[in-house]
Amino acid sequence: MNSPAPDWHAAARALRIDGRAFIAGARVAAMDGASFDCRSPIDGRSLTQVARCGAADVDAAVASARRAFDDGRWSRRSPAARKKTLLRFAEGIVAAQDELALLETLDMGKPIQQSLAVDVASTARCIAWYAEAVDKIYDEVAPAPHTALALITREAMGVIGAIVPWNYPMIMAAWKLGPALAAGNSVVLKPSEKSPLTALRLAEIAIAAGLPEGVFNVVPGYGDEAGEALALHMDVDAIGFTGSTRVGRRMLEYAGRSNLKRVYNELGGKSAFIVFPDFRDIDRAARTVAGSMFFNQGESCNAPSRVFVHESVADAFLAVVAAEAPKYAPGDPLSGTAETGAIVDETQLRTVLGYIDAGHGEGATLRTGGRRVRVETGGFFVEPTVFEGVTNRMKIAREEIFGPVMSVIPFETENEAIAMANDSSYGLQASVWSHDINRAHRVARALKAGTVHVNQYDEDDITVPFGGVKQSGNGRDKSLHAFDKVTELKTTWIRIDGE
Ligand code: NAD
Image (cartoon, rainbow, N blue to C red; front, side, top):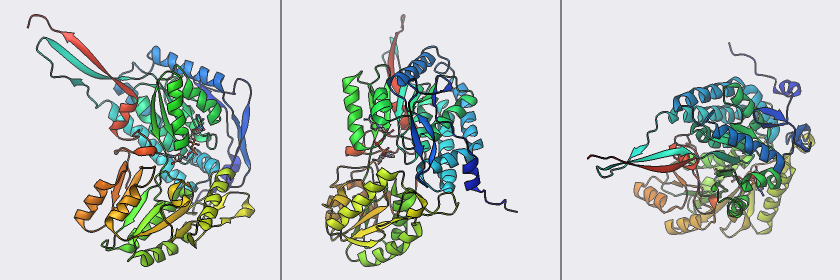
């Protein structure tokens, strides 16, 4: 017999939320006592006060991370021992799944069942995957002359600063934490001020699982306060940043103004989705683009927000997209059945509505959606929105909206589609839909993007790198390649006498 669906509203009312920072293994208030109000986008209500960390708190967190790294309490444990602890951390995440999912949904507005099935599950899998990987990676011995041995080893960097956004708060944190901790580093994590709650709980769960104190610290606060202090810190060895291209630029400046720390940027996107007339199942392409675009309220860096459709199939394709879009209409995120939830906050709501106005203003035609809904809840909800008759020069086709707004652009020739797809400052992901094998390969090769999908858009896994080219960034999260960002290569020459 199925157990009854949980009453998430009752669980939310019963939840006690601690918004204090997590430094040196303990919950602490900001040193100057400052805090900010953390409000839920579901109904606009206050959830808790969160520590507003500043430079002094970041200093304390970095110092504790450095002490932990230097005395070897984690960094000098064997990979097999680190694996054991991190696997317990992953188990702790699963054990706390209801609480973590609830915090994520209340904090950033996504549907609770997605928080459980996607965010919590992927976070646990990510930590477990890096735990499992770390005692299976070998270093190298170079083909040196007989008189010497040349070792090429990877060493943990030291203190890694992680600065992450609000759209998948736990997953984005896990993509930084997994490789960094597995490799033996200490981490100071700065979650977004819009979604700080799960990061704080993750740190508690990690320490309870046996991660030594000081190895994982969380400093909630504003970007230009805690974030800037962390990115400028002279004792931070690398910054793993995920967020906007605008702030990614600043990360490079901060490194230049401080200690030239390594900067790995995972930034915005405006991903192209190209449908050729020889793709035999136009319905499937249309259903896929709607699902991928509107999932997570359109707040995904890789959302396929620029859709290029061959003019001969544009009408049929758009008819299906327009019929699919309302299925992603926002509902109560705590109901357990809503396909989409609330936009993260009022500022982002205004941004999204501003782009919808810009679409109207530039002469695009609204096919469906376009309005704020569920206003009576006090929350921030926008209908899935599709514009047709868009040109690649329009603002809605050039700028990342980060909300449920799709632009559909017709094309005539393959070269024209490739040229428009690549005519973007971004290069995160792209997709080509064609049953002509030569065309599919040709176009996939020509697209400037970190990931190209062929005849699908949904596949994703921790086993493959994720990241972009051009102004979508330079880093690659996920897969074994992520270890490159948290380790340094060292060459050791050893002379062998008597050969
Ligand atoms: P954002 O750049 O505004 O903020 C990201 C983080 O940086 C937050 O923690 C914020 O507090 C901090 N920050 C802001 N200003 C700062 C400053 N001056 N100094 C230091 N830190 C600062 O981005 P956002 O609105 O939180 O997230 C949305 C963006 O993230 C979108 O552009 C999206 O495409 C991108 N994103 C990219 C990926 C990827 O893997 N490429 C994944 C998810 C989101």
